[in-house]
Image (cartoon, rainbow, N blue to C red; front, side, top):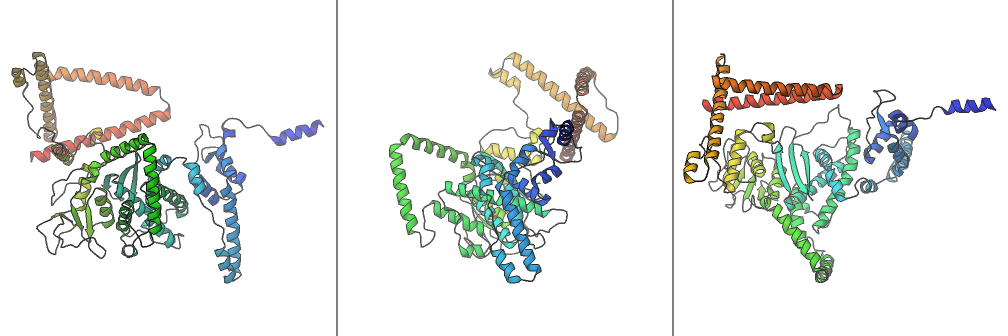
Length: 569
């Protein structure tokens, strides 16, 4: 009896505690769920489960760890059984094809079990704001696959590409209709956009309109699993946004414009027509009756709850105040796009800021010879007829105006395109074109800024006028002398570096430099003492941060010196 009990204890093993009980490796999770690696990856992607980093890795550093609770969630997921059913059914199709029974295989494919991810969307995003916060990667992925060619090798069919293109155009049409676009930046990777929806800033990347090529170093199976979930998420978001505008979803597009690849323009027309109450098609009589009933109910609600309607009206006025600058930027301006410019991007950006735009081809709102056109967007010298009544600008001019929220002067040779996502003050270097744009913005707001190189108001004159006291005048004079000494020292250092000579310092400057050196030494000692109390990992991270800051500082100093030499020439 005792031998049996001891044997059972040995077989039961030691009880797990700590990290060994809270985490398990990926191979243990596969054995626990009895699935293969590809199916496990799909489940983790659609459920939003990611690997964890425990403080103590029991099985070693070369393993991937998951939380035990996450694996238990996967074990009770109804989608797991559906995936197993689909896999079993696919084996039947393969068996029928192996027996060369094409009719049976075709019949089995028509009856293949399907599944939906609607429940997982509601599970992962309880509120609409949560879905908007997680929309950056979703939009980037959908816009990427919208421009990819269909491929049998990567299991990317034409229907899926068209669905991604439709979802991306529906999103852009809503952003353009509500004037929610805030920033645009053209880079080598593509075009970055940032919009503000429901108080949430959403940033996404769209590829350039060029032929995309599949690479062998990318696992498209994982990407297609992400895309499957993101398509469902974006469809839910578009449904919510379109219903907020009282627009039917999915939209009904003009077949002629859709055939001419003018989906975004067709969507804009559909949203405008639906929001204004115009008839989209001939069979909308029943919809008009429903609209009358809804208007009657709204009037009754307004009569019963005047305070609630007052709050709603105040909210709408506040939203209009936020987007007023974007609505009126390109107001009363008409643009015409040449054939070589990125048409979809400019259609989206110009429409989002209140401008009217047309292009070269069928289905365009107005022709090229329209006399009311104010700007003609080209990307190379025009060899055709030049109109004197309009300005010829480049696509970068549109993006710069959007980022600055003012109409900049048209130039034949534009300076380098500046990123609106970079804080120049925090970086320590302000480009020359950024300073010019800042002065244009101040002039548009009727703010008075000093011109570059202009002297400030003399404190002595302010003293005579009674504006400043003698103490303030003395402090201003002391600060002015200190600034002049620093500028003189900087120019002497610069000349010494250019000439290769040694720097000669004045007697008064030597005392200040000794005090600065003493303060610098104290700061270095304090930093070294704090670093000695860090762990090795934190110390290495701190060293990497300091190296990055030092490199940025050296780069900024080099740019400043280059600008001084350029202005001196």
